Amino acid sequence: MDRLTSMAVFLSVIDLGSFTAAAECHSISGTMVAKHVNALEAQFQTRLLHRTTRRLALTEVGALLAERYRRILADMAEAQAVAHASAVSPTGRLRISAPVTYGSLKVAPLLANYLEIYPDVQAELVLDNRKVDLIEDSFDVAFRIGSLEDEWLVAQPLGFYETILAAAPAYLAKYGCPHRIEDLRSHRLIGFPQWQSDDVWRLHGPGGEYQVPLPPPRIRINHAAGLREASVAGFGIILQSSLALEADLAAGRLVRILADYAPMPRPVHLLHLPDRRMSASLRAFITFVNKANGIERREN
Image (tube, rainbow, N blue to C red; front, side, top):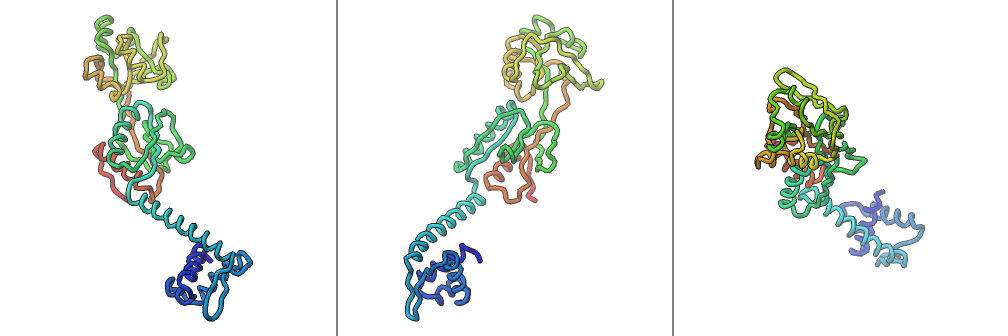
């Protein structure tokens, strides 16, 4: 027998003054009302009500439990109301994972705009290039660049992440601009050790794939922003995402070189758990991201 239902029936007996009135209130029989009360009394092995043909009266234990039951049922009602509101209107907390560069330049502005629209949502954006586990690491959603390994997750494609070659005008003025892919071998190339573990740039162009070995580095920086700054300062040629370099290219601080050669674009996906009962805040965020990327999401 459901304990919460028994509590509600017991309180109705007290408030309405009879088993018959409580039965009508809950659309059950008087016998069933008695069973609910008896179940509570059996649990505590004591009477909760003094019953006579004329009136009902709470025992001392019954009075204590009635007060406790009212608080429990009130808390349950409040929790259900909060859950219902969360399912209908975006509210609560979102935890989001994204790669460092893409997350800083693409996701953070999107998230700021999303939070302006939904003021009852709080969000945490964790920037990390590792592939997180949504369940173990407690993330609601993750942006992923590259191949997908978690095939059981729902993956929404968001386009491609492109990487290009660029250098500062000062560097090109001093060392010359490479016009052929082979020319890179005589230039100063700035590598990203965490991205190219084998110290080779794999570039695709009109003739297929080209492997450009990186010379022993004179500088190592394990963050894309630091590498970009070194290239802007004229230290060498950089291979980095077009997203990270677009402001420098537009301002003339960097110049794109060998535009026909670049690594293969990598797909970008938005990942979330396959839960049809997702919160309204997560559903709204997914829809917001899709619209920002020109994608119309179909509900299953």
